[in-house]
Length: 141
Image 1 (cartoon, rainbow, N blue to C red):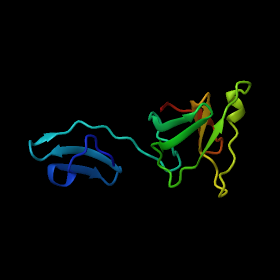
Image 2: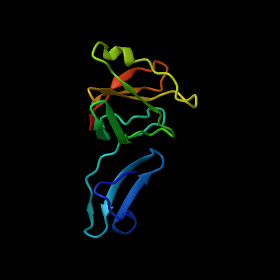
Image 3: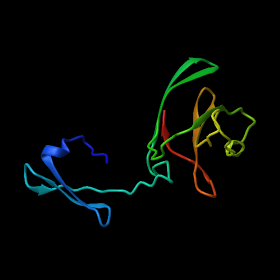
Image 4: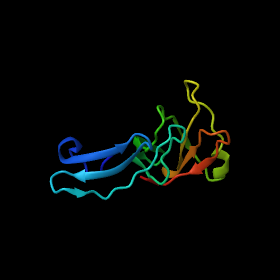
């Protein structure tokens, strides 16, 4: 569970979790005795990428040919997150990068960062389902 902004749930709030439905029924602020407005979403391990969230990528341009990816932050519910970084040349089409292989340990790739003109061009995500559809997902560099 993630709470924004961060609070001390143990002392300030009472969270009523319904074990039958596996959902939170309500949250009560014990200090002011009022219910807290909240929303919840069910995260499924098989889903992986949390739909509707944005990937944050910190980069550093070293020179006109080198982009250093310092940090890649993604909301993903999987135990393992695999990614690849590839460079896209001017004469290539984005669809050429929709094929996902395996990482160096034999695990299926889930994310692909496409670099073009020394900046992040696209971030692709491949679903873990049977179809394994590939999606372009929002990112902030």
